[in-house]
Length: 356
Image (cartoon, rainbow, N blue to C red; front, side):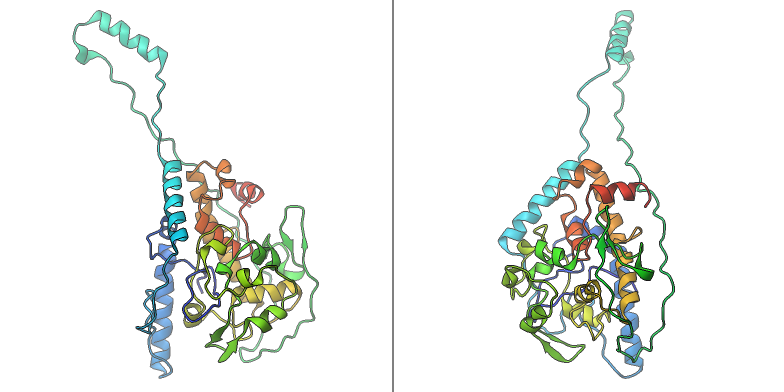
């Protein structure tokens, strides 16, 4: 199934934070139009199947319209709206083609010579037409294949694997998981780094209700079960009013837990979604949902991941390697990838441009 920056838990009407929305026409959203078409098609196909079985009614929020007419669409705070305008203006200025102000001395002398031979200015050669330098192409990345693993019964939730050790960080900053995951699942942020830096608007572990497990999810219990401690947990983990200003790149990137539940992307053992699974996988748990989640990550942040490629394209349009240090370039895409345990830095940019 197609993936996107995954699910996030919050109060009943959380702002979008994991996947992308286009409510403000952000340019980053244009990179993901094909995804949205596929996502909508998947949801419709699922609804039709459930309806034919008499199990469900069609989703009412495929296009971001809530089934509850009283639900208010989350709005940007003044600070978020101001930052969004600043980012747009900055990226537009970086992409603007600047006409050269220097002229060829040889061409200028040629014009003088010709004007001395004729009296008709119409015979003077026109100045050369400036051409836009072609944009460098992103090298085709090598597809990485996941080695076969054990099969599970879809009705079984038993964890059949022995706990694995935590991954180590390689010299390149990527996490090294052992076994079939080595060299395939290579995030470069641990769950702790991801949350400490600012992810999901600060509300991933806020109190909410799970439609999958049919239980209330409490921040107190879930935060207590984390294998690490985060300072300012009220702001970074259980914020009941998630805000893009709490994120690493100070922008929103994503959708609500309820939307991802309806898309069928939540496993009942990890009712909060991707980041909950990742935290437990990093700690050593192995379960039947591992392969699905790793494949999702590969489609987002792997060598051929669509969000990673979209960010590379934006960086190349804004100056290439030099733009990597400018965190305002592709801020929404960067935040999305950050919430999938991946940070685009100069090392990662170089590897990508080498086709790795």
